[in-house]
Image 1 (cartoon, rainbow, N blue to C red):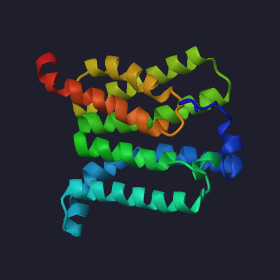
Image 2 (image 1 turned 90 degrees about the horizontal axis):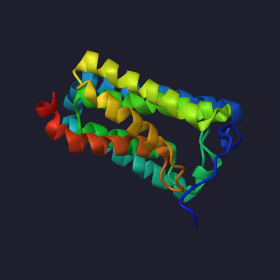
Image 3 (image 1 turned 30 degrees about the horizontal axis):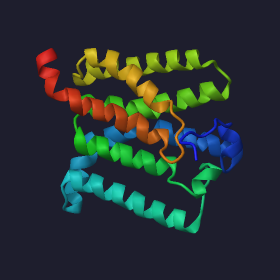
Image 4 (image 1 turned 60 degrees about the horizontal axis):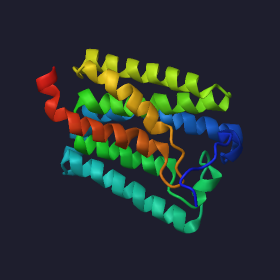
Length: 208
């Protein structure tokens, strides 16, 4: 079996048709609220639960995976999911894993904000441009520009090293591109840039 999957119209494969597709896009856009909730309210939520903040994050990811296992066991798809997700880990579950790893491994505004914002805005933009039959070159260019702006804004707001925008923007765009059978781009678009951040972060102060 090939490791690649064919490109299809996401509306045609979404449970609920266009409304399901719009819900899916809305969930993506709403993910920008995750770093806000984490940095502004995470500590108080953890205190109320009598846990450390990393324990809360890990617990949410574990819960998401348990629920995903139950869903797969029953072969269900919910409104907004794709038909094929009845038999493989869903984009939502992969996104939960990716976001969880970001918050566990780089729980700093300088990195968590641009990584999660890239997934929240970059992935829907690329999907919609493809759905409207834009040429690959245009999709790659516009997506890279958007992600570059995200990292620049993060540099201005949270002190992210500005030079990282030039590296992470194309890497994040390319991380979304492969159409893999079992690993959703919600995972690759977070985990690949995250791995790069972890590798170069020890040199940040030297290069700043």
